[in-house]
Amino acid sequence: METVFGTSFEYKLIYVFAINDEAHKGLLKIGDTTIQSDASIDALFPNCKALNQAALSRIKQYTNTAGISAQLLHTELAVRLVRGKGGQQVLKAFRDHDVHRVLENSGIPKKKLKNSTSREWFEVELSTVLKAIEAVKKCQSNLSGMGAGTGFTPIVFRPEQEEAIEKTLKQFKTGSRMLWNAKMRFGKTLSALQVVKKAGFAKTIIVTHRPVVDDGWYEDFQKIFYDTDDYTYGSKGHGAAIEGLLNSGKKFVYFASIQDLRGSSTVGGKFDKNDAVFSLDWDLVIVDEAHEGTTTALGDDVIKNLVKEGNGYDTKFLALSGTPFNILKEFDDNIYTWDYVMEQQRKAQWDKLHFGDSNPYDELPELKIYTYDLGKILTDKSYVELEDKAFNFREFFRVWTGDIKHDHKAMPATAQASVPGRD
Image (cartoon, rainbow, N blue to C red; front, top):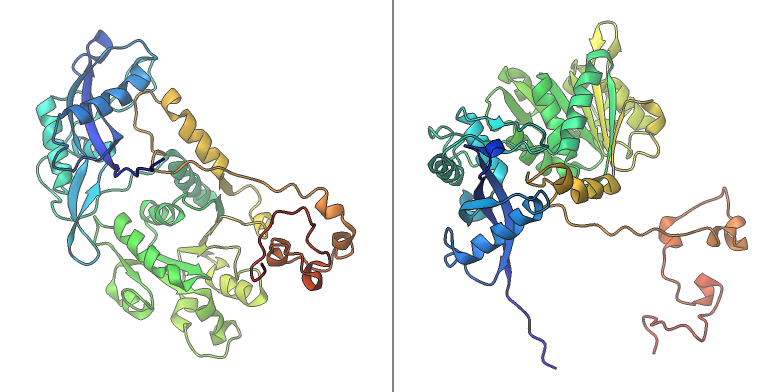
């Protein structure tokens, strides 16, 4: 039997529809969905059959349940040309909330419907919506054309990100410490920088055990502060050194590695450096991957010399980690937690709880989470004898090959296994 591989592509599309009843009179909804097609972008022109069918399929997912008849008014691909890292122009998808923002920035707010969870309806003419879509394609922030060509649009934070930001700002009004126990892809970098922006912190330092993430922090700094000249960024890889930041007269975010700071004589290191960093009265200290490198004596000294408390000092401290198993006790109840189970539950329940509104979790792939049942294994004599002595994850999950020297037992004759280097 011949196997045929398809050449299907996945595109985002924008659709506009109305509901002809009294509750939705004069209102339009702008949504987005995904279409899989082997057609080229040029072949998927506005309001073509393929786009209309994809939009109607999405609309029916939530209107049929409510017994509502929708009138589709417009569809088109949600793509625009933006400037890439090398300066060349590249195609990039946009979302319905980008169109919503242009309308809101132009004085056209969302309408809240009575007895409905839906929040993305606008009292607007179709022609105005089409102008808003065109404005998004030109990277404009409103219908008057302001902000054209910036290449950046405001970040739309998901509900849990907004919760973390607001909880942290509230905590910082009366307290000084906060931990985000949030798994990878939560968006800790962007959300933490939004805390800086909303609080108006003048002097913020980001400390991490992983210097390589400087590029990511700098990139996200540009996304958050793209619309203001009040802030600047500095590190050994990007922007100015600490002295240059202090002389700039601007608020700033400074990035430093804990390895570099540990080598400073101020904290017992061998080198006369970073005096300006340690002498500064920081408004906020952010520790990225806070479970790494901060619990040692040297790491602890670095944090204590940055986070100044008492005697008129009030440095705020925000710890970021996906696995804070070794620092949880330091934060009492001042912890925001977000895990993969919560994420997948929100994704699955969104359409049911938010009638017709775009699902902010659509772009987060489905996760399949598996666990190891170690009950019987941990009662084995060979493990019990090593209890309280050592535990090595690499050794624990090493592939068992039946090598007597390493595994102490031969491979069972009935095992269907392939051992590298053996026939």
